[in-house]
Image 1 (tube, rainbow, N blue to C red):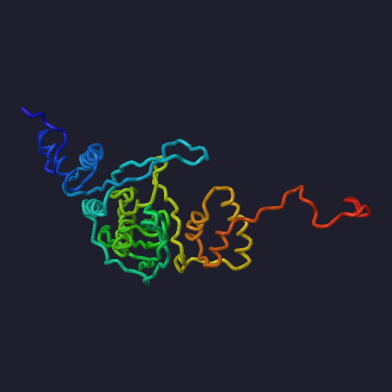
Image 2: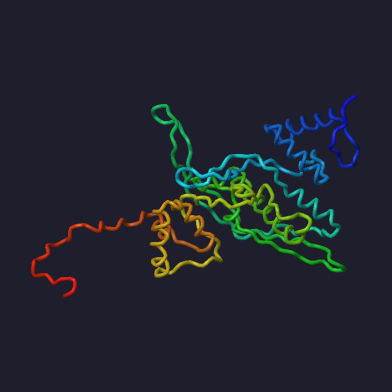
Length: 320
């Protein structure tokens, strides 16, 4: 006789081990193609603990970089790729509906359409038959921001919870700063899902929790068990922050520039990594971005020869 498995479907009926193996096979071949046995088992454990049907794919398997707690020879964190189970926007909706207080949400409202025109790294066949990396221009249209309102029943009234998210602060970037295939192809839909997730967290914190969705976690690391944003390099070109952010005057920029250049010179961040951080706080002109990318001036050696001869009758330090 087959051994009874511990996993239960939604109706709480016990299933056999053979049935559980069939579910696992279906998940690997259809819903999570290419996933390892260990990753599929994580999905099953997550669904079993939450009372979810794994065949409805309420969660996603996301490959992320996770800190190992070790340092390399330069002192940077050593990370490894690891599969992580993350909820989808569908699970957020399910949990909100289970409360009996969910009254729906608005259609996503989008801000003005912007255009990112820059270059990206592309591998091509070189003249000697070897693959080489070249920069090719590209253009992507995206919404500057998205706004979604979730409605919740509280007592005898309906209360609205609104979230507003910016595309530049959410899109999944490649190493060269250009958006990945999904965020380039579905710029509006991807931002709408991230915005709705934020609104649902505001309205139903006890139901959906604080764990971000798989769409939101693209381009992020997990450090010490906490999801942390990885500042992506901005695409090469005129990529600017949302219009609401302030800019720097010439005097303010000149005062800050030495500090920023020193951060790059010390190896704490690359110029593009630093720019990605700065552009979440202020707007910069293309000329200012180029100035940040310039290397810091090298100070003259202390024992350098003076540019002119010093005569014997030159005043001493005390006399000067």
